[in-house]
Length: 407
Picture 1: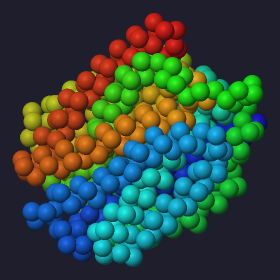
Picture 2: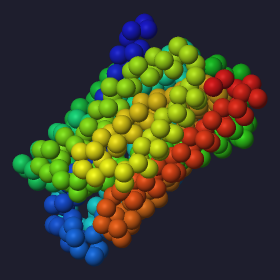
Picture 3: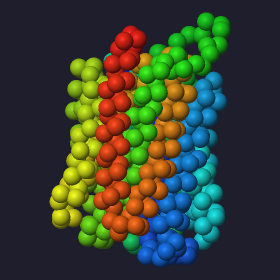
Picture 4: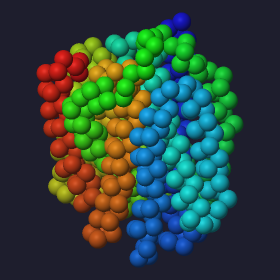
């Protein structure tokens, strides 16, 4: 029984998130050719603004959909929700491959953001309902981490050569097609209804209210602030890293490899960090240190001159932060939030953090790069903000402990 849960729930959602992140990042890889074909080529005055909008409109839809989707789907079976969301955004991804219109591109990416935003909180519902409390960090690493970072690592390495050989349209046909042909049927066959979950509390006849207290009380606001700063760090780098490494002198195949290196570092570090977290229970401390170390490393970018050295700092910062923070933050939320509030709380946090923070960071990095001619200034701003987030998370741990919440 237990082994089948890890395969049917954990592995299936892992594969789904892998493809979901290919759908998110294909635009970053396609940007040089796509921007030229759609009339805002790199180097022209309008590129920074238009590229920022096309890259971040996904996150705008993602922000609102996480918040509202988590709330309005809390009484729906998450299996049905993830199947329909995946099908809709896969169609929207394929549509991009057929268009030369910036307007249609924006609408398609907005649909992608809305449906992926509704999808994300369902993963926390699966984790909370199907895995034991002491397994949560490892479960989240599989469900919400490895697929994400493998897609960013392997995805850049796979999509860049496809883009170079077949053009940008092929990226959207392939990534959208995988969702329709492989992932949707896989979800139908392997995922199980929430009613069968072993760790889902039985209703007592009265529908619990969704309140701030149910989501952890005032300390939840500190967690949200922390998550906003990490969302800025993650998306500020991820949206721009293919162009950032290009500016550091990496082109062609080396550009794909250089873009992937920080995410490989995150993958390598994730398993040991998850084991340490589950065994020690020091989830807040480990997550906060990941943010603080990453912020300091990014502030050191001007201290090194070579492109390789700058890439090394970015790699260590992103890899260590991701492995320390990402699996733990969801385990913290799932351990401190009332069961009926897990989906809504996850949606609110990810919507404001990844959607809101990521949108702001995408524009900040884009505008600072346009004004300074370098991605360094934007990445340094992200580093300073994530240090504040790490301090907020440490404070969250103290406040939550005082109210008897396990962290």
